[in-house]
Amino acid sequence: KQEVTQIPAALSVPEGENLVLNCSFTDSAIYNLQWFRQDPGKGLTSLLLIQSSQREQTSGRLNASLDKSSGRSTLYIAASQPGDSATYLCAGDSNSGYALNFGKGTSLLVTP
Amino acid sequence: DGGITQSPKYLFRKEGQNVTLSCEQNLNHDAMYWYRQDPGQGLRLIYYSQIVNDFQKGDIAEGYSVSREKKESFPLTVTSAQKNPTAFYLCATRTDLSYGYTFGSGTRLTVV
Image (cartoon, rainbow over all chains, first blue to last red):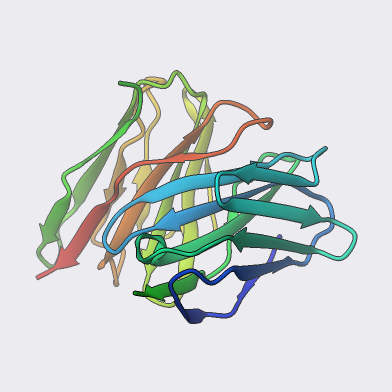
């Protein structure tokens, strides 16, 4: 079973700072890696999906990379804004199609 | 608009009662999933279904039941055997292995 760990658990940064969220997983046979955002009391919003044959994806100020050999993924947020404050979740699955295994998330606070 | 509808948004259960959470999708996705989210524990898989009339237990299926009679619907019943049902329940769908997961907005269940 895929075990996913996210570091740090919480992060507070001033507005405008660039930041990196880390995700590590135990099974290098990971198939897809997906990053989500969750606002308090809400469902999950997909940010980026890195498919099995890819190494990174970009959307606006967000960039996610995947290194299967080291079992790590990073989410880079450029020029952070207060609206980026949320919990960010990393999740991976295997090619058996079982389901996503989630990390516990990184709670991000961007202060004005 | 295509999406996932979870209802109700809030649900209260008395001791000994069974309650059913609804998940409906119009994305035409084959696979559907139920996750439970508790503070500090991340998301844990309850049940999943990859095709109509078939479903599989996840990591924490005890005290829960599901059905998949239609492609669009995957209701979750929380039975009286589930001793600690208070949590946030999230439904997700996916079309196939090559694509990411889409989540609903969740149902918050509280035991009173």
